[in-house]
View 1 (tube, rainbow, N blue to C red):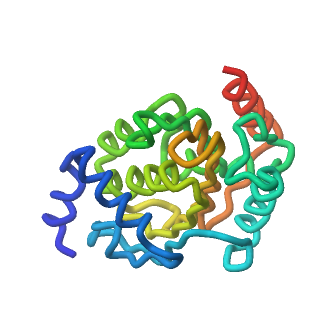
View 2: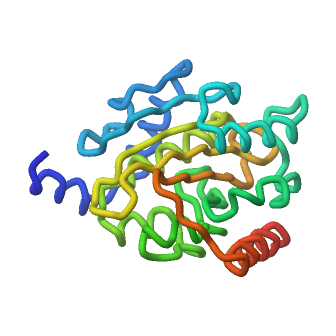
Length: 220
């Protein structure tokens, strides 16, 4: 793809109704989601699917899914109170915790793991997804916002893997998005494991800080 096409995708703001339209298209897929459903031809999406079991997932993502599945019991999803960082302590560096806003059309980063912030170049804690994507200008707004909106409205787990559209030390990101709340359309938190294809090892102090921030976020 030419640089001028990528530049147009990178700088164009995405309207809420378009985000909602793409989210509806994602929700209409039974399991495997074709890359074209995201309407982001500049972005290489290697895999996307609604998740109903741990089997097709990478090991760490499968482990987090099993925790989420156990925590929900016979409910559609667990409540936000069920989020227990000790159950996914090994993954804290690559955990994102989001607070959905405006019925999932946007979301605020309550926790942004250091293993994601380091290659991304910034900790986006406290910033909304819309603000982050419009600051970075990497053409990711529709992909991120539509995915989160679809999980909020559907109340289902979503896995997606994409290639970074801009030069970073990490070229491939694998995300598992898990909803916590009362049910579809009433999601209080999104727990995301965003695992890069390269490993970034955090110190004990960094992991403790992530755990502390998770605790503060759940209390507020």
